[in-house]
Length: 366
Image (cartoon, rainbow, N blue to C red; front, top):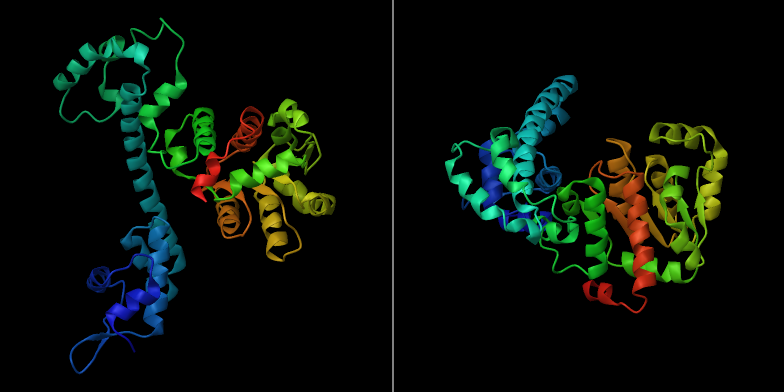
């Protein structure tokens, strides 16, 4: 048995004694035993339960959801009932996300302008004070309002990089090459929030530049991904671009999943090509999972994994496994990804090596 101070030390994850006491009030944690001096006492079961709470919270679950999940482990409520509640909560959250996304769209429309448009903004900004106080979405902004904001867009080409500076999160602590990759991913996806979900291992850029300099192979999971890779730059670097599932009729994520499981030849091809090469996975979660399996068994060592497969179940699981491996990677949290984004990440790494072969800015973060 140990005190609340020892409990939070064993659990870590930013848990504090105040949070533990709050979880007791909510029923997330059972009321603890007490010492003769009335101090709370805990055991290993409390540590495990608090670790589960912390892990679920880090995944974004609300405390009310976490309580339901923990209760379901003990048989109440039933699993089907819990799933129904979570589905209801998801729809509620989704509606809120739509509302917030509309707000973000409105703010992006106001802030995401280059300097050539700013000469028309002063008068338009003055109109904001006349909008209803409850204005939160683009639906509340009439055509007349946007007319003034849009007055200058026909006078010049858009400066995308300048516009992104107003919208991207603070990236000042990131190496210039990483900032370049993130900017291009945002422009390709049309979603500024993507920058917050991209994850790169500290050695990803260095590993990519070393492997590309040595003429490694670049392997896309599907033909569409391999086709999106910049073969001109890769040829300049002496790198071949291949396809893991080398079948032109496999064009979608679902086709790739079936082909990879049904035809053992593709799994063997993966094992033959994995060592020392850069993998660009943009569609098939099973390809990324198999790569993780081979790395975990220490039977393979790829140079870099760009793991951005699509999907809502297997893909997030594959990405989480990837981020636990001691190999260089670029990936994303959740389902975000796709073949185009995976190829763009590779293309920007190749471009940076050709354009700035002596750049060492990426070493500052290591």
